[in-house]
Length: 135
Image 1 (cartoon, rainbow, N blue to C red):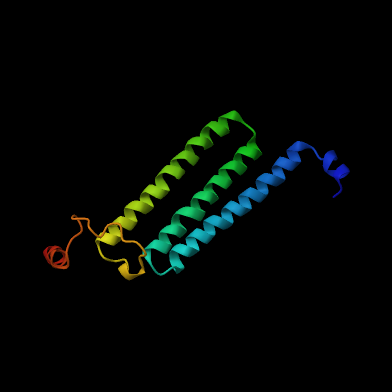
Image 2 (cartoon, rainbow, N blue to C red):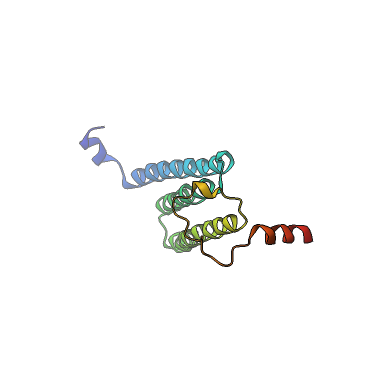
């Protein structure tokens, strides 16, 4: 399309096309995150798949909904969704990763820096066996 033809398009059509593209990209990112959760082999890479593309996908879909609806009420509904998603997904990933480290289900030799190596709350091997035997 030439510049003259772009100028003839109504803004509503341009915003609808932009929202369509954002929904497609957001959905692709969410599907990529789901595939990563199933296909990746260890906890840290699964956590990256669960948080980074999934959060960006949800944000893009919310922006697309806001562009397509063009309403203050919809925007007021979408802002808390985005904020809660940005707050809870990384926090949940941090907690899952820390628990995987403490349960020793993560390969410690793959860690470049072990910031929790001196953490006194991490159970020893014999304590972990005792806890498993009591259940």
